Length: 276
Image 1 (cartoon, rainbow, N blue to C red):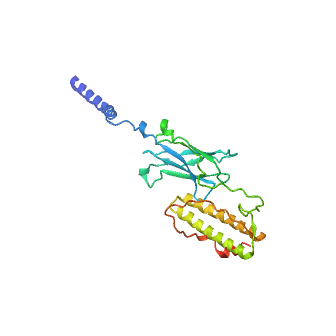
Image 2 (image 1 turned 60 degrees about the vertical axis):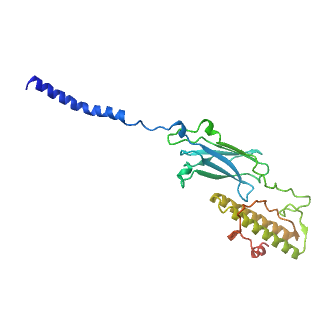
Image 3 (image 1 turned 45 degrees about the horizontal axis):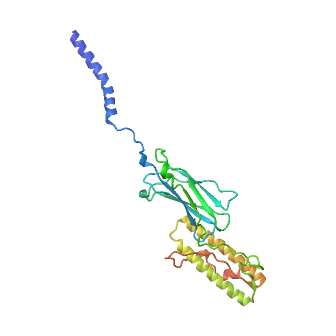
């Protein structure tokens, strides 16, 4: 083999070995770099102390909403009663990851209940939320954190404070003193309160018909507690042969509220007879 022929084969062989390296260099210059989150792709979460659950004087609705265009990873919410001071607060609430409104029906809102230790009477509740993070772990910063805290000092607005019992009031009979009454008057009095309870319960159920399942469950629990209090009130009246007005909670129904079936929450006359 001549020298020129040998040099040509060496050149060809070296060229073949260089092709993979050249291909990698071309790919590195043509392919886009790995995606990274821009500054404007940070999530924006908002926490709200909404107010008392319908029909309740203790259960407070707290809502977390993703108001941005970017998915947010899980966060942690802390809720406290700042006035009056509370001896022991519940542990932090774990908030699920939240999608955007445009990604419905995937959730972009998370709601939970914070319960006061006593009936609302000038209470102030504060809620704080940890910073949300997007798919790359980039967290809310600066102005985006402005709505990660909320304070509600108007929780009890429109809710009558528990009335003090006047001198001579008897336990379990409400705010007014128990007035001696004949059996016929006692029956008429308790029938009237039965009708008041059923009307109140229908309004609460109707007003929460479009609410979240959590709010509906809270309203039903409050109605059951109210029913137990009313029955206890009646037992005292019957034992002592007297009548006293029962303090029904104040409640403002929604404008489109109408009659609602109560099921096992309805109070019938037969049940009144069983209260003895």
